Image 1 (cartoon, rainbow, N blue to C red):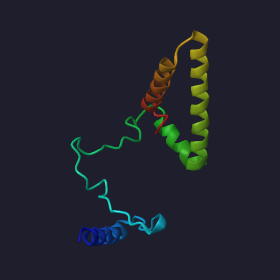
Image 2: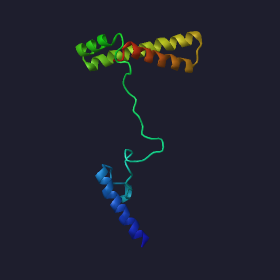
Image 3: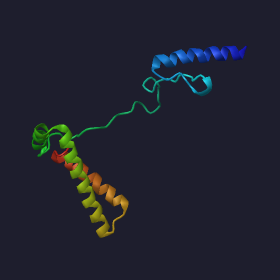
Image 4: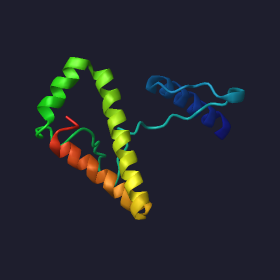
Length: 124
C-alpha cells in the first residue's frame, strides 16, 4: 500500500515540478521530488540583502565618468575600466611584493582602493 501511495506522491511532485520550471526527467525513469523555491522558504536569518552598485554616486569624478560612458558606449567603457582596475591591482601587488607584505595586506589595499574609487566617483 505504501508503495502505491509513494508513487502517487512522486507523480504529484512531478506535476508540481513542471509548474515550477524544474526538469521532471531523470536517469533510468526515476521521479524527482519537487522542492520549495528559495523565495518562499522561511529562514531564521531573515531575508538576504543583495549589495551591488556604488554607494557614492555623487563623487568628484562621477560627472566625467558618466559623460565618458555615454560618449564611448557602455561596453567599451567597461572594457577600459576593467583594464584600468587590473593595472591598478597589478601595481598594488608589485608594491606589496617590494615591501614584503602578505596576501591579507594586499587584499585590504585593493579593497581600500575600490572604496576610495567609489567615493571619488570612478565607479559611477
